[in-house]
Length: 105
Image (cartoon, rainbow, N blue to C red):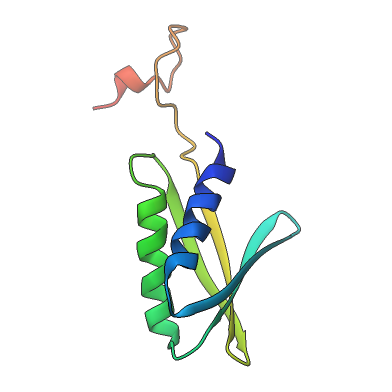
């Protein structure tokens, strides 16, 4: 699964929102951070907006999203956002593995 497509859709959905002025994604030590400048938005409103956009971007995919507020400075909000792929097996490979998906109840 290409997470870059999910990121593109996520950022596009946020850019459509009229209350968001600028969005930039920066990666530090392998962790993506989103810098959002939004006028007349409270942190809780922006959290709700991020959750809604993430759920739309992940629709139909087996992903989870971790959204963490980091800091705010002069109307620029910084969030650590990660889209995570599940770590469990999703199919049977036919090798009789001890953690086979067929053996789950």
